[in-house]
Image (cartoon, rainbow, N blue to C red; front, top):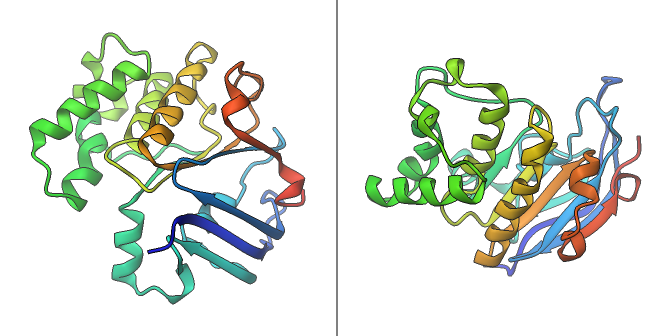
Length: 227
């Protein structure tokens, strides 16, 4: 298996929608423990670079490798297995409405690992604490009755569950309280220390200007994609 977790090689992508950012000749590499933060335009409605990294859409040209394997060469089972090793936060929320928040958070670990529920639950409690939540009683409720700002923090927690090879986040500040944004950095830096590669796309000044950002490789969006 390659030491490189995620690699873009001269990737180009152009969507027909005027609301989607194009990707042009994008090349970068993330290894275990690396952290890359991409500064995006606040007006961007959708940036496909996250979908590309997850193998959800195919580039018009170029190659995208996850752990040394081209997404384009994987079959459906290989894709599913690889995505089970990726923790994701999308720019729009995504919850299974019929499950409690905690069951949503634990879902990937229950499906892709043989860990005991008690162990997974302990990890949820640890990550919730790192995320700055002292009273997590609402984690046992369904998403529909939990405040959006709190749900956004729980999305960060869900992405960091287990030992993902990659944590990839698109605009984690969307829907979050400004008071909580420092905790998304604490969570992702915790994951990088455990060996996850971290990729974050953000337009949030609080995140971009945080005093601890010297640990991150910060890239301007136009260096990876054109508006």
